[in-house]
Image 1 (cartoon, one colour):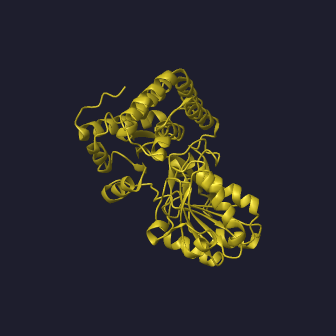
Image 2: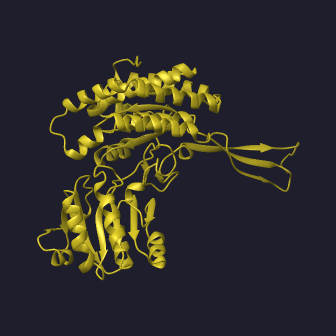
Image 3: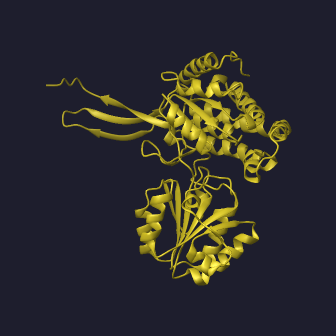
Length: 421
């Protein structure tokens, strides 16, 4: 249970010092003990499913007028709680990233050097509406030897607190300090400010949420940040695409879950294939409840589409809306992505291997896919068990952030009495 003082700055300092102490215990914890804590936490999630769902229902009831996409991100049900529990078990089954020898070599003077993976330290996780982040982030941080302080949004506080209780139960039963995973006691925005100023207490901040949250963190943080910009993802249907594949992949990429950051927000389609294929793509998505913003060329093929603006092409809809543009080939598709994209995830649908390679080599985004849905940009789909978020920056980590990305490294040097001349 949280016993933090009411003052946000004092609460953060107390939590961070307890987390720092917990990292010492985690550093010496055998893999088997960390795995046991995760398995016990998974069992607790299943055992307390009813309480978690009840807490989630209170969160939803306290936030009327939610958009369908926002409600979907907030909602917990039996299936999603089971997915959280399985995620913990999958993380437990993964190799321990701590202590891996990343590289080893010997110098002419006989010195033997090793580059060895080690935890980052204390992670500050700031997220909004997805309560499952509580379990995912806790699992990845614990397994990688990091302590984590979680601050969820007000809309998910009850749900996050209920999930955290299960994580704490697993830690306690495994003999690990409960301070390894902590949740902010309230949704006070001042606590976020204290986290962002906590240089020397927190080693890394990971924001996971909308543009407003990420912008605030990047502007105010005095602590290193691992963040992603908007998930402005594109699916490009090349002239060499298989029509049936293109229809199936686009429907999934856009409409499987519209509120996730890996959802496709813009369709780019080659002019050579658009007259034959675009009407079917629009019809498929309309049947699933999608609306459109389209350029003149697309509207000439499918009349009645709302005209797209530059603002539309730069919008992460997180909703059942798709921007559409007809392009003249790979180069124009890449130019559009460079202008409007957020370097998150892009996909090309084609049977032309040369075009696919040109596209994958030409994007700067963290993730590129060939003949697959952009919604595969997800830690579990990468085999990471879960993810703490998606990173689109150029330093340290890119794409889904899993166990290995939550480690840094140090050097071990083995000598036989060498002295430097």
